[in-house]
Amino acid sequence: MEDIAQRLLNGDQRALSRSISMLEQGSPEAAGVMKAIDPHTGRCYTVGITGPPGAGKSTVVDRLAELLRRQGFTVGIIAVDPTSPFSGGAFLGDRIRMQRHYLDPGVFIRSVATRGQTGGVPRLIKSMVRLLDAAGKDVVLVETVGVGQTELGIMGVADTVLVALMPESGDAVQTLKAGIMEIADIYLVNKADRDGAGQMAAAITAMLQTSSSQPEWAPPVLLTAALTGDGIEELWDQIQKHRAFSEANSQLRSRRERRREQEFLEAVEEELGKRLKTQIDENPELRSALEAVAAKGLEPYSAALDFLDSGFDFKPRWNPRPPQADDRG
Ligand SMILES: Nc1nc2c(ncn2[C@@H]2O[C@H](COP(=O)(O)OP(=O)(O)OP(=O)(O)O)[C@@H](O)[C@H]2O)c(=O)[nH]1
Ligand SMILES: [Mg+2]
Image (spheres, rainbow, N blue to C red):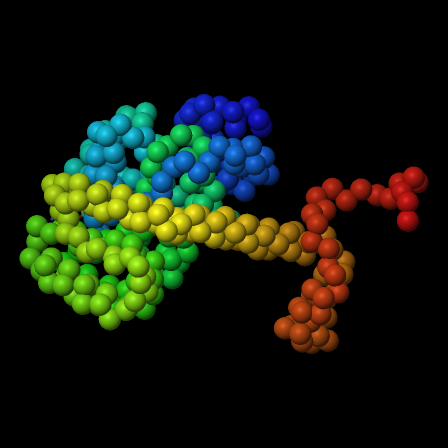
């Protein structure tokens, strides 16, 4: 185990890939790797990008990666539930563009399917980012689709959060009001080569003026045309500005501290859930409680609370060992 962690720390991409797979599969060895690499993290900068389907998030990520590589930075890309182009579902042009990154050892691309995932996705992504960090990536870009509540959790992984919209995203702006505004550090209206981009930007700006979710940082609203690369340098400048801002007022530090706390709590919740499930078969107390609940001998909600208060032991019992003669007590 130290071996895979050590290879990862030396920048070995295969060790990185394997570690990520271990995390995804919830393999027990993953914890050992996470522990070994943790002291070597904290150097990379994480940028999240979210927004409605088809807004051009992947194209923006692709352009940012290109710009970062030109500046000599190494890049990690995590695409959560990608429909395009990482999964190959996109237009040929996008795939060809991304392929040049696949051939570049300075870019590590990984997609994560949330469906069928056993663990919590936000926790998984946070751990993944730390692996990329430990493997020496300078910048990690995390793309998630949507403007709903789940993305908010996923976006808790990022030091700077971008919300990408396009001229046709009128409905999405309504959704934004409902919550995503709290998390956006920078807005971009992509596909600025199309009609209506200016109006869209004006609508977002107007919406921002009526709120003060981030009193010290006024999120800029940028126009980009990722397909041609227009506005991408300005975007990177703004990301660096936001970074400088949040470093100066120690917002970055507190965000990262909250993120670690969050990851811990999410992992506890996940593990408890898993252990509870395995114990349904193995624990006689739990079984009899379930039977009583089913037979209406116990009311489910109050019984659940009583059950927890009774000091239920959540320790895993993978291989229950029969009592031995020398056991004490
Ligand atoms: N006209 C125009 N089209 C663009 C621009 N940026 C991206 N596109 C196109 O919009 C489509 C969607 O782009 P993606 O980058 O895949 O969008 P996405 O937001 O990642 O999409 P999902 O991951 O599926 O939600 C592709 O056909 C892109 O080529 C742009 O600046 N202008
Ligand atoms: Mg995409």
